[in-house]
Length: 195
Image (cartoon, rainbow, N blue to C red):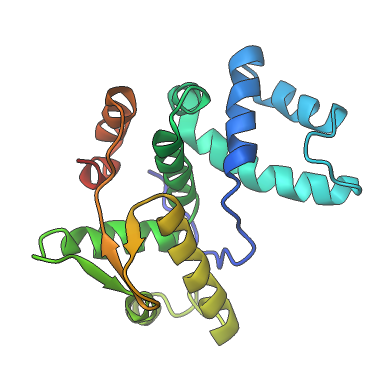
């Protein structure tokens, strides 16, 4: 996987419906350009302003593209749990900090007898990364706060964590259908988060 620059993804959303619709259209037309055309010609995003539609489309289209042809094919027919996992995968592939938090930090917690994740651990991980990349990870307090909230939301939606209380979460492995599990197993390091 290509190393992305760190980006404070504070405006990112789950985009589950949009990415699933992208996958559905892609299976019909097999062209990312034609998918884009259909989104705008049919105003599938119901945006009033073209600039808003383009900004929103670019955010989720980038993530959909990161799934590749096979991921989009699987997403098109996925169960809710499989779709959540694939959308989480697209998010993690798109954002370096979130990817590293999961695969450098969280993954090690699977070995704990009770794999509990505290919200404050995201701050600690940020500080550790900031000490290694001070020029790249120079986010404001507000950006870090929004990013932490967003990362927790994404991990909850993707079912990688489950809520225990307001500040701690249970880390869980993803239970997926056979086809989607195979897709994760063939996409290192995502093989480490499935049962």
